[in-house]
Image (cartoon, one colour):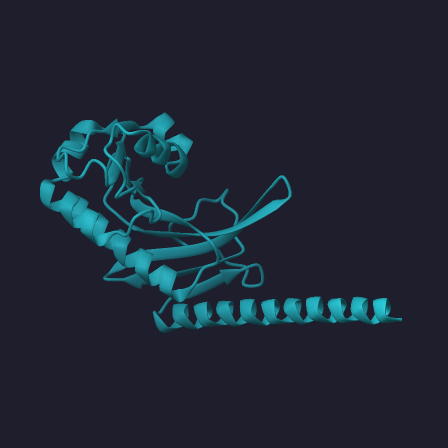
Length: 219
């Protein structure tokens, strides 16, 4: 009898946890929907029958998305789920309009040890997507003091030489927290992929960071 009551208690606790999680998730989405509306934007999910008009490719799948304008620039944020080997990862992406430039990826990897140290090399391997290091050329950061802090990959080193001024690199190093989502600029958008559920704070913080980078590259 005691075992039965214990089992029932565990079931009740699990059910309560599920209900709390579902209510919290619904509230989070309601808050995001209200935020999109407050910005004069639009909400998209399976029930809306619409897709964002900017920044999402036809082959990209998502659970929901919101689009709005900020500083006169189009912004889209969308959330999705990846399932690999039974493990589920929730993620969201934020994209803003940017100049049409050769692809450029920026990462804040430090502070860590000196660039030739095993720790630095491990950070490059684990933090930077393999596709980026495979498809793009690593751009040597000119300032030795910044090399342990940031990593840059580009499709056109001469373009990087032109836009990544010392002032921009020092601003980026100071403005972006270590191990923040990388910033990928190309095809007219600046984009970041963030692991975890979307929130108003993450959307606004990443949007402002992407806009600052896009504006800095455009100068």
